[in-house]
Amino acid sequence: MTGSQRTHRLPSWLKATAPGSRSYVELKSLVNRLSLHTVCQSARCPNMGECWGQRTATFMILGNTCTRSCGFCAIATGQPAPVDEEEPDRVSQAVAALQLRHAVITSVTRDDLPDGGAAIFARTIRALHERCPETTVEILIPDFGGDRTALAVVLDAGPHILNHNVETVPRLYAQMRPQARYRRSLELLDRARALSPAATKSGVMLGVGEQPEEVGTVIEDLRSAGCQILTLGQYLSPSDAHVPVHRYVTPIEFDEWRRYALARGFRHVESGPLVRSSYHAALQLDQASVAATSNRKNPDPAVRTDPATRAPLP
Image (cartoon, rainbow, N blue to C red; front, side):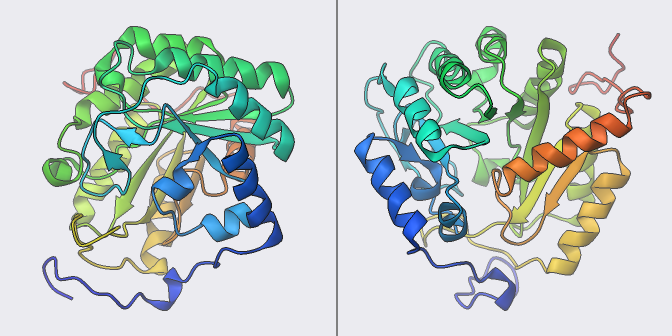
């Protein structure tokens, strides 16, 4: 395949588990009964059959309509519905019913809200802590338009992992994330470690047309921003209206990138064709915690720098 030519025949390593197990049906019924959204459904995740079959899901708060129009995402763009003030409680009900030991909460981007939805994130985290005190909480947040106060509100609620994906290399932001800014995302991750002990995490999609040296630079930028957990996965275009797949990255290449990132100090790297942000999320937390414990006598090797200038921070 050359250029951005589409290929409709997927390679063998991109075959996923088809949905339909008993646990899948039960989880779907629970989500519908509580009027919740999952990014698994809205973003057409290829791992839904596997994850739902294991009774895990990523809950998506603040509705299912996004104010941004990313070229890679299947979630609808438009004017979102008013904020559902009861949603945090219903999410905690679902997590309790599933008896999850690790819950992942994300949202659409809500540029229409003064705080970007930060208050609802915080209320959801606190509802989970109260109803499910043994459950660890991971949040996958938008950039809140760079609002420092919004980020602080979310972190003050006490998540265990804060995830914010840079998604791709800076050169491809115009087509992949036209309303986002690469440096703003790095600054968010760097700021988060100064505000909270929560582990920080980010993800990158490969196969969009990025060059190897660009991927290496992004990995190093994320590590310099203090990011501790990294996910690398294959980009799959949701439809002909979205950015096309440039190529299918092989499992061998994903393994090479995993070793590259680990050598630069990441505590855990999940890298493979079907990897998505919350894929094996509980395992990511476990392994990152083990790595943190083994390095407890040594400070974080990442040097804190200003993401805009690369100058060392005090």
